[in-house]
Image (cartoon, rainbow, N blue to C red; front, side):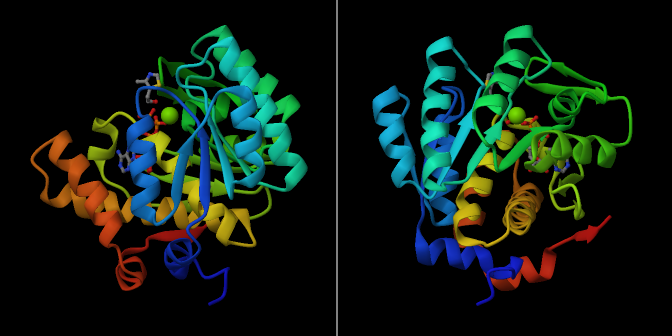
Length: 266
Ligand SMILES: Nc1ncnc2c1ncn2[C@@H]1O[C@H](COP(=O)(O)OP(=O)(O)OP(=O)(O)O)[C@@H](O)[C@H]1O
Ligand SMILES: Cc1ncsc1CCO
Ligand SMILES: [Mg+2]
C-alpha cells in the first residue's frame, strides 16, 4: 500500500503497531492509552526524566501534552523531546490551555524553542495564540479567534515549522504549503473531556507509518471524526458516546473510512 493513501493508513498502524510514548496530563491519560490501542498502536506513558529520555529513543512517536503541567514535567518533555529529535522520532505537541495562563503560554513557547516539533494539535484558540493572530483560551477550551481559521493555522505552521492540526467543528490541517479542511466529527465530541488529547494520540499513532506528516495528521483527523460521527449517531449521552467512540475506532474498516471521509483542499 502507498503510505500516502490516507484510507489505508489505519491498517498500516495495525500492521506496524508503533510504540507511542506520551508525556501527558492526568485527566485523560487512560483515554489516550486506550484510543491508541483502538487505532492499533501501542501506548506507553513515561514521565520520569531518565525513563522518558530512554523511551523516546525507541518510540515510533512522542506525544507531549501540557494539560496538567508542572516545572518537572516540562523539563521531562524537553529532555525526551531532544532525544526524540536526535533519533528522528516525530514529536507531537498538544499545547493544552496555551493562552489561558502565562505559565501555559510560556511553557508552550519554551518547548517549541528547545524541541523540534513535527505536529502541533490544538484547538482554534490555542493555535491562534501560538500564531499570534489573536485567540482566546478559557481553561482548556477555545474561546474564539480574531481572524480567519486557515490564516491562523498557516501562521502557526510558518512560525514553528510544524504541521498543524487545528480542531473544532471543522478541523484544519496544514503544513504551511498544503491545507485541508475536515468536516468529519460530531458535536458530542465537544461534550467529552479529552477528545482533543485523543486526537493528538492519533496524530502520534499515524505519524510513524506515513512518509508525510500532513497526510498522517489528515488521516488521524478524518478517522477520528468518522468514529465520532458513528458513535454520536447511536449514543444516549457523553458516557455511552465515549464507549461507542472507542469500540467504533477499534472496529473501523478501510471501506468505512472511504465511504464517510469528508475532507477537501483549501
Ligand atoms: N462541534 C463539533 N463538531 C464536530 N466535531 C467536533 C466538534 N467539536 C469538537 N469536535 C472534534 O473533537 C475533537 C476535539 O476537538 P476540540 O477542538 O474540542 O479539542 P480540545 O478543545 O483540545 O479538546 P479537549 O481539551 O477536551 O481534549 C476533534 O477531533 C474535533 O474535530
Ligand atoms: C480538563 C482538563 N484540564 C487539564 S487537562 C484537561 C483535559 C482536557 O484537555
Ligand atoms: Mg485540548
